[in-house]
Image (tube, rainbow, N blue to C red; front, side, top):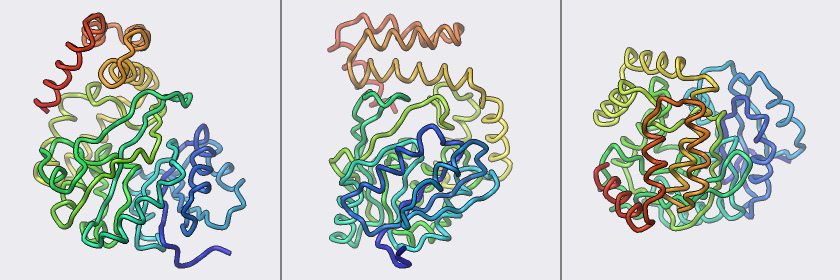
Length: 320
């Protein structure tokens, strides 16, 4: 029997996620903490996403179908329909570690002054192979508050938050296409304590089908609007429409695939020093987009000593 008063709502938006969503759902159902509902917002999928969701007989799964309106609208729909006071965000192509919900629930129960808690995460490729471990830029509340606004403090699908705090902040801004979470955090963390646990509680899947791509592959105008919006804490409808048009123009398999291999190449160089794998992926990116000079530069850099590459990466982080 499905509980009408679960301790946690796991909120999962899904759009054409048929390739990965079965594994994602299984990772939630296999949690050590069991008093939850898995609320899936099917955002107008045209593949077999809904069929796969309905193949599960677990009563903790709730499905809401809506026409395709984007991830922010799907998340707002989920917030309005979440039965729990605590919400764990989760994406349909990622994987939860078995102790994810338990660790974050225990933290928020023991620390009522905190409104949001995230974690570190392992990143995997589209085939599920490990790429690198992401240690977030800030763990303690003090570190989170000290981050420059341009640096996102959380991995979106790794956070658990108090629903009331997010609703009081207005939820997700539906004009902030592709950075609705970053804009939300820039407002929410001013209203209460926030942190990231020193635990790897999630596997984030990098894949060429994702709506998120390496931001170096976005246009200069996209980055200008995003940076300006986060700094002022809001975005206008006009700016949102401009962002939407930029994303539509870039929403093609060639750009996504090139960005995917470029990102893998950089992560294998900066975050998990495997220069041979880095070069192999960067060569794939070059074959797809031979005019991008940054891919050639990073290949050259991959032949330098590891210590020099690490030093250069630290300098890069300090400038961001």
